[in-house]
Length: 136
Image (tube, rainbow, N blue to C red; front, side, top):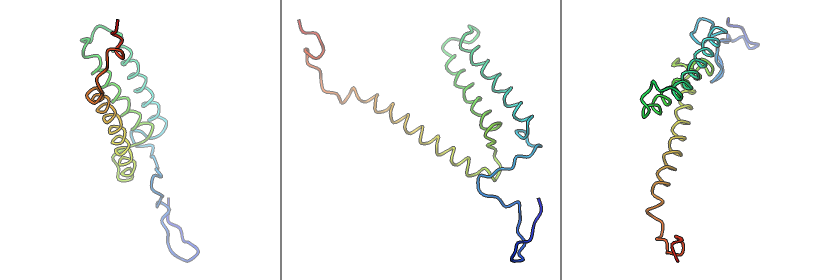
């Protein structure tokens, strides 16, 4: 892209773009058709690994949940990099901050809900025998 002259005679840079407007080059890891095919292949492999981890006896049974969480985080990473083109470049600062803010809000809602539900029992009034259904 080159510079061009405006009607007022000023030189303007065509490379100047709006925030969030991305130009993915073919030379990036996640750029072009090959990046999409690689991302799709990795997503399929991680999906198959998830089903195998849930069904197989090769993984110590209490560790299956941990394996599924690790595979889910890897799946999110593949989608963020290969399909949403979220990288560490300077043009993605706003996108990363928006993602971090979204994760913070979701974490606050989930953890707050768990905290409230865990403490509901402490604040409940005692049940009468009639409410508990233990009356003869």
